[in-house]
Image 1 (cartoon, rainbow, N blue to C red):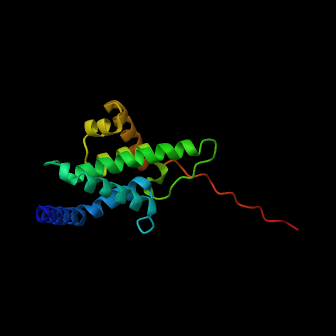
Image 2 (image 1 turned 90 degrees about the horizontal axis):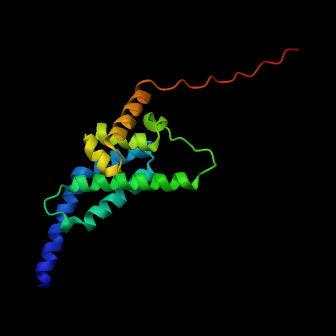
Image 3 (image 1 turned 30 degrees about the vertical axis):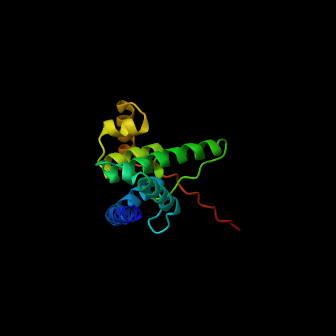
Length: 166
């Protein structure tokens, strides 16, 4: 009996290691896009990835033919949305710091919809179900995010200090 559990555990570990080797990089890139952090300095994205992989590993035996990448991506997106919601509530009344990067000008919801739709190729209906939003709202958020990326708002002009005249 013990031997059978040991063999099953070793097989599970090998399968999960192979999954992480194949999907870990793409999931990390998606998390980095969501957090709008720099690729070489992305602690929030790495934390999201770690939590997502831990959740996937915990559910590994119960997947029963379900795509583990899809499960990990769903958890990653849901965790990001939940963390953003809590962070937004914590900073009420204080000015928000916008992340940098290409996607930094988007709201967290716009980044989430855009990454799921464009980078991950998830259908509108699936994104709507994952985020508990109507399909029309997902379409609107996606269209607005694409418009902001294609036509970013102009940056405010820099102030030039006047030179003192004698």
